[in-house]
Length: 567
Image (tube, rainbow, N blue to C red; front, side, top):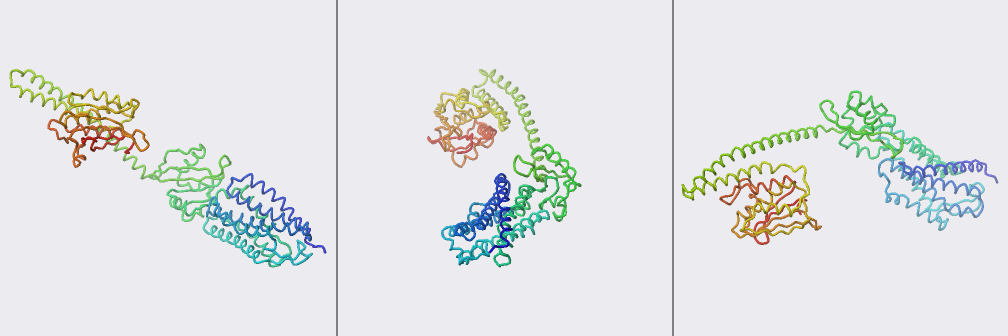
C-alpha cells in the first residue's frame, strides 16, 4: 500500500542532507568563529539524523531498518546537545564551553545511543509490519526511549528559558539575536511534539533541526551577530571601572555600560542604541576627535585628553577574529583625573627636592671652600708655634683642625651620598676594595678578602669606594688594635651573588644600638664625626640597595649590603 506523503518526505530529507553537507563544510572552515564549534556539533547530529531517516525510507519494510535505526538516537542527541551548548556560550554562562559541561550534557544521549547499538529493543520494540509508517513497521516505545525524548525536550526548553532571560536583561539590539535563536529551537521542539502526539504522520524533527542549522549558520557565518554577543555583560562591563561603549562596524552604538551611562548622562542604554557615535559624543567633542584619530591611525597609545576639568584615556579596541574584517569596536574611557593629580604632585615634589638638593650641594661646596681657608691658616700658625709653645697645645690645635677638616669632608660627601645613581656601571668589587684599602690601611688593621676577580656590581665607583672606606675606618676607630677585617660575597638560595659583607673581630655593636648606628652624628668614639655610617647608608640606598648590621662570626660587627634584594 503506497504512502501518500512518502515522496514529499524523501524530497525534504534529501534537500536537508545536501544543505547539511554544505553547512558542515562551512562550520569546519570557520571553526574559529564564536559559536562555530557548537554549530558543527548541531549540524553533524542533524545530518546523521536526516541520513538515518532517508535510509530508512529507502529500505522500509526490510530487516535493514533494524540496523539503520540504531543510529537514530545519536543523531537526535548530537543535534540537541549542539543547540544547548550554543546557548550556554551565547549567554555567557561558559565561554568557551568547558569539557566538563560538554561531557555532562552529552552523557545521557551517549548512553542511550550505546544501548541502541547494543540492542535496538532497549528503546523500541517492533510489534509487526505496518505499511503506513516510514519504516514499514509498528513500534512500541520503552521507558528508556521515553526518558531520552523527555531529556532532549528538556534541553530545548532549558535553552529557550536561558535565551528568554538573556533577552529580558539585554538591550533591544540583542533581543533580535535572542529571538532568532529561540526560533531555531522552537522548530525542532514543535516538530518532535507534533509527531509524538500524532498530529503528523512523519517526523519533521530532523528537517527542522537542519532548518535551525541554516538560521544559526547564516547568523554566525554571514552576519556575524554572535561575534558581539553580550557575554557576562552584567558581571563584567557593568562592574568595570571605566566607561565602555560597544559599536558595530558602522560606528553605531549597540551597548553602553553603567559607567558609560553616567558619563554621558543616559538613563537607559536603549535610548542610544542604534545612534551613530557622533550623536553620543555630540556634547563631548574631545572624545569624538580622539575616537576618529585613534580609529584612523589604529593607535593604542594616545596621550590623555582633558574635558571639563578632568583627564581621560580613550582606547579603541577592534572586535572580531584576528586578521579578519573588523565587526565592531569597543571604546574604553577611563577617568584618570586623580592619577594625573598625583603625578603632578609627585612631579612638583621632585622638582622641589631637586631644587633643595641643588641648594644643599651649593651650600656644602661653599662651606667646604670657605672653611678650608681658615683651617689652613690655623694649621700654618700651629706649625709656626712649634718650639715656642708647649707641644701638647700645638698638637691639640692640629688635632682639632684635622677633625674639623674630616667633618667638612664627611659633610660634603653626605650632601651628595643620597642622590640616586642614574647611570651605574659594572664595577669589580675586588678592585674597589683594593683601592679603598689603600686610603685607610695602617699597621693596626689587617684585611682578608674573599672575592672572585669576576665578581661585579652595577654601581657608581667613586661612591662605592666611600662605602668601603667608611666601613674600614669605622672598624679601625671603634676597636682596640689589632683588628682583622673580612670582606666577602653574599649568596641567595640559588647560589647567585646577592651582595657583599664587611665584618671585623672587634668588640661588636650591642643589639640595642644597632638601629641607631646609621643616624647622623651617632658615634661612640670621642674623635669621630658620627657621619661615617650615615654616609654608608645614604650611598647604599642611593643605589637602590639595602644594608643591615649584625654580629660577625668572631663576635665583632658585620655589615651586609644586599644589591639584588635581601636573601
